Figure 1 (cartoon, helix red, strand yellow):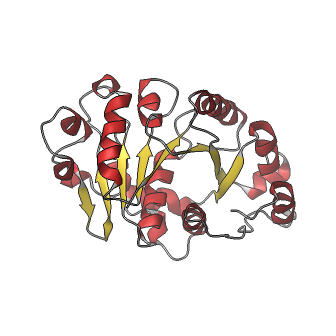
Figure 2: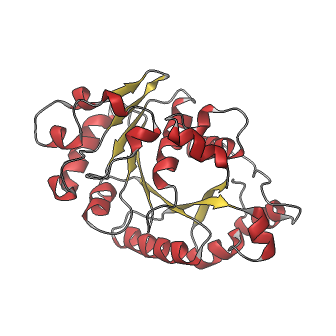
Length: 267
C-alpha cells in the first residue's frame, strides 16, 4: 500500500467540511479501501462525533506526536466498517501542539498501512491549516454557493497553490435548486467561474445529513439519500471511476450545461 493523503479544507467554518471528511472516509471504506481519518482541528474536535466514535477515545493526535502512545494505540477502528479508522484531535490543547513536520512524519508512518489518509483541516488559514496542508497529495476545498464562502475558498485555493500543493479540487456543498433557480443563490456555473478549479462533487442540500450527523451515523450509510449518493460518487471519482452527474437541479438543464462547460463527467 502507498496511501494517498487528502486534506479537506474550507475558507470558513460551517460549510460542511467535517461532515464531508466523515462521509468521504466512510464511502471509501465501503469501496473496500483501508482509510484513516485524522482530525486536525486541535481544540475543536468534531469528527469523532459525526462518526459516532466519541465514546471510544483513549489517545489522540497530540499524544502520538508527543510520544505518549504509538500510532496504533490512538487509532479507533469503526466497528461498522473494519477498514475505517480515526485518529482524533486533542480537545484540551491548541494547534501549536502539532507542527507541519509532525503531520508529515505521522502520514509517512501510515502510508504503508493504508490506502487513504483523510485529514480534516481546521477552517481558515492559520496554523492548523498549514499543519493539515503539509503532508497533502491532494486538497479538496469545500464551499457553499454563497458569496462570503466562495471568497474565503478563493483565499484557500491561492494558499494551496503558493505551497505547491495544487491544483486543489472543489466540492460544492448544500446546493439548493429552488434558491438557485430564483437567483437567490450562486449557481454552480457562477462558483466555477469565480474559483476556476476542477469540480469533483456537488452535494445537494439534504436535511438527512444533519439528522445522520447528530446520530453519529454518516449519511453515506443510508440508501435513500441524494447527499449520500453524491458523497459515494466523489469517492468513486477519487478511485478513478467516471461517474455521471446527478441531476439535482430542477428542470434547468443543469447537468448538460455543467458537463459541457467542464468537458468531463463529474458530480
